[in-house]
Structures are given as C-alpha cells and as structure tokens.
Amino acid sequence: MPDGAARNVEITNGYFALARALAEWTGTGGNWCAFAAWASRQAGRTIRGEDLALHLRRRLEERPALQAVLKELVEDLRIDRDRLLREISQAVLLVPAARRSSEAVARGNVKVFAEVGRDVARLLALLQATPALEEAAIRGFCESLPPGPPPEGRGLLAEAFLCYWRASREADAQRRAQWLLLGNLKIGFHEQTRLQPEIVAALNVPGLNTAELEGVIHVVLSAHALPVGPVGTLRRAARRKAAELLAREAEEVLRMLITNRIMTIELANGEVLRLGEDIRRSYPVSLQTLVNADLQAQLRSVDPMPGSPRTSGARNWAEISERMHFIAELFRAYQEEASLIPARA
Image (cartoon, rainbow, N blue to C red; front, side):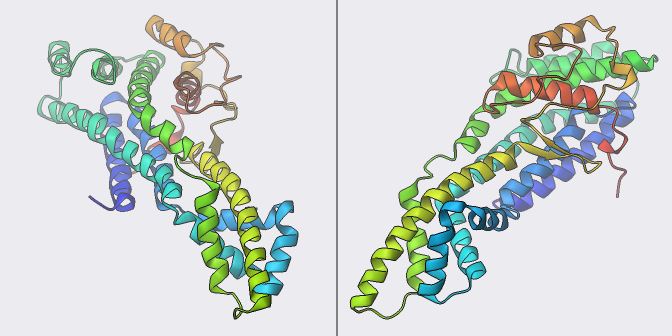
C-alpha cells in the first residue's frame, strides 16, 4: 500500500487480530502483538503528523525570543497573528526533511509487521490445523525459521514461540505468566534490533536545517508583503531577518516535538507513558517473584536493577540497551492490564 497512513491502520488492526488469536492459545495476559498494536497506533499519529502543526504553532507562539518579531510582522503584513503562525507551521511541516522522521517510522512499522507479524500468523495457522500442538511440532516449526541472532536470523522468534507454547501448556498461572513474559521479551529484543536504523533516522530528523526552513518561511511572509518601493525594500530586509529568527526557533521546536512524539505511547487504558520517564506501575502478583530461571537471566541482561522499575526511563531512545530496559519494565508491569487486548469489534 503506497499510503503510509492507511497502511498503518491495517497494520494496527492486524496486530490486534493476532493478539486476540494468540491470547486464545497462551491464556490470560498481554502478548507481544498486543503491545505492538498500541505502539503501531502511536506510530500512526507520527506518520499522519497528527496535531503536529497545532503543537508547533502553539510552541512558536510561546517562544520569548519571537514576541517582538511577531508583533512587528503582524503590524507590517497586516495579518492576524494566529493565521500567520498557522501558515508558518504548515509550511515548515512541508519541508522534505521534516517528513523524513514520519517516513522512517512508517518504514519501521511495516518492516516489523511483515516479518514478526507474518511468522506469528504462520504459527497460528499451524495451531488451527493442529490444536493439540505437541513439542515436536512446535520445535519443527521453530527450526523452519532462519537461525541465529537478528538482523539476519530469527532465532529469538523461535525461542519466543517455544516460550508461548510452554505458557499454553502450563496450568499454574504464575508460571504461565512468566513464560509469556519471557516470550514477549525475546520478540521485543528481535524487534528493537531490526528497528535500530529506522529509530535512529526518526530521531535524528536528517537534513533538517535552518537555511531550508528560512526559505519556506520567507515565502510565507513574502506572500503577504505590501507593494514594492523604498519602504518595501526595507521591509524585505526586515522580513528576511524575521524569517531567519523564526527558522532557528522552528528548527529547535520541531526537533523537540518529533522526539517527544516518538518517545510517547498511549496505552489501552488511556494512560500516556513518556519513554524518557521511569515506569511507575507495580508488577502484577504473578510477576513479582520470579520462579523462571530463564526469565531471570533474560531480565538481568537488560535491567541493571532487576526487581525494580527505577531508572527504567530511556534518556537516549536511539540506544538499544536503554530501549530494552524500558521495554522490559513496560512488559512486566502492564502484561496483565485488562484492556491491553480489546474485544473484537
């Protein structure tokens, strides 16, 4: 699908469908596809640039350094202040570099769904054909995946699917929840490794520069210019200086807004998590005391403070170790959130 926004809607709905189907097999608790669905939903807002122009306009309006120049422009161009800021914000978002962040998010969104989503769907097809799936059958399926670590191999996915199978066969609720969490973490590590190039590209906003922004802002100001003449010449010089100042401020604000948008996720219960802040929810009872040695080892590999969500906020989302620490705490704290997997519409 060439339309990234429309494709994102289909991917999000696909993840929800996979999450529901997996939950019927593994039992109570959020699986990786459930978390992926909400992350994909958030990615859609970035892809669509949802409300970004509005936030950019408001942030520019609040910048102390712009107050005097905006007042002069409003008087010079005889234009409403809100309209001026709205047109400037819309022009800034049309700069190709400003769109690259959304494009990087869209690439990552489809990349992971095409890989992990497909393998989950293949696993579910096997389960449909063989409801009482024995260990030999699940191992055979896992061996069909390319071995080794990501990005080339899908060995972590194979390990995760074995964890899900063990969860499906486990009668004890605590042990089942811990096998499920281990499977979620293994897919999460595969996913984050595969997404590394797209995450770095999205956060870096490559190619965004003051000169390009200054050009498009100057076009907006010139469109409202008064007739030329000696006074007009002076005003053109003033508008050029105003465009330069606006561009510097817009670049800083836009980078901040894009980063904040990427580093935010809204969950099913309406809770908004900032990826740079620590997880504050307590672990559910089934995941407070860990009895699964493999899960303990997996958490020690990504969490410098096992057993506590403190310091889980990722200061640098481009660093995979910081992402995985946050994601491990997110999965553990929210795995039993009742609204994570919505009922079929």
